[in-house]
Image (cartoon, rainbow, N blue to C red; front, side, top):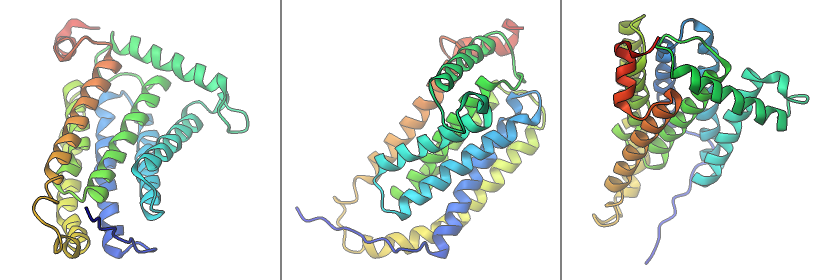
Length: 258
C-alpha cells in the first residue's frame, strides 16, 4: 500500500496563523467562562495562561513536524511547569520543580477535592482548584489544536471547549452568565468563519488524489475525539467534585451541600 507524505512549509501561512488565533480564542473564552465557578477573578490569569501555553506549544510542535505523542508530552510538560511557577513557586529550587513540588501539588489537589465535595460554586480560588483548572484547560487546548490542524476538522474542534462550558454551566453560579456565554459564542462564530479558509488551502490539493476509502478514517477519528472529550469531562468533573456521578453533583447544586 502506497502512502502519501505531505510536506509542511517551514513557515506558517497567514491562513494558519489566523486559524490558530481563532482556535485559541475559543479555548480562552471557555477558560474565562470558568469564572462562574469561583468567587473572585484571581483564577483568570492562570487559566488563560494555561490555554495560551498549550496552544503555543501545540503550534510549535506542528511547525517542527513533531509527532502527536511528542507534542502531547511537550504540551503537558510546559503547562505543568507554568502551573508550578504560577501556583507553587515557593516549592521549586530556582524555578526547577522537585519532590517538594510534587508533594505540595498532590496535597493541594486532595484538599481541593475534599473542599469541592462540601461547597457549591462559586468556590474560593485555592491552589488545588487552580492546578486542576490549568490542567483541564491545557488538555482542552491540546485536543482542539489536534482536531483543527492534525485531523483537519471543523466542528469537532469545538467539542473539548463545549464540554468545558457545559461543565461550568452545570456547576457554576449565575454571575455574568449571559456575558460569558456570549463571549464564547462570538469566538465560536469567528472560528467557524475563519478556519474553513485554512482547511480549503490545506486539504483540497491533498483530497484530489484520495479515494473514498482512504478518507474513511475522518469520521471514526472525529467520533473518537468526541468520545474522548466527553469522557474527559465526566472524569474531571467527578474527580474534582469527589462525587460518585452526575446525579450526586446535581443534588449538591439543589441544596445538599453547604
